[in-house]
Image 1 (cartoon, rainbow, N blue to C red):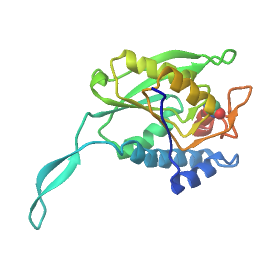
Image 2: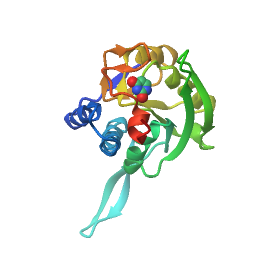
Image 3: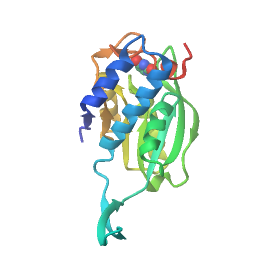
Length: 210
Ligand code: URA
């Protein structure tokens, strides 16, 4: 299995992403843009959800109408920047359960270190969407997916806003069964593990911490 990458090139997403990237974009606008892009990505990422027909009654007459079926969804936010995407996804998928995985990057080795994990008890029977805006080295993405797989889940998609080729390669090597959805794939990582041209530190820009 070689792994799949879906770059969602919808004009609305691309326009909003350009605003996010601008260095002068303030925290409140950055936050709103992440939420809006997440809502649009939710649309794409759920395109293959099954439907079932149910009997309903409109004010005019009875009819059979489509409604969502299939496994319930679990959204897993990779702390802390994943919470920005989570907010937008929950607007579109309000019944989803939510898990959190806390990972930080060791500044020397760039390895992912887990400091927190809380997943719904029934995560194994759900379709899981793992959320983190930046797929950079891929270390935390691989660790987050491994953690979710350990809990028994097997239907997993990874959703980000920007991906580096290095991270995509790492994910495809470790988890070729997990499709990646992103708004764009950038050029490369710099020596500090930042995506180039990128948008800077997504967590800092979301939460105004720098
Ligand atoms: N995390 C970020 O927030 N930005 C990057 O460019 C890479 C990882």
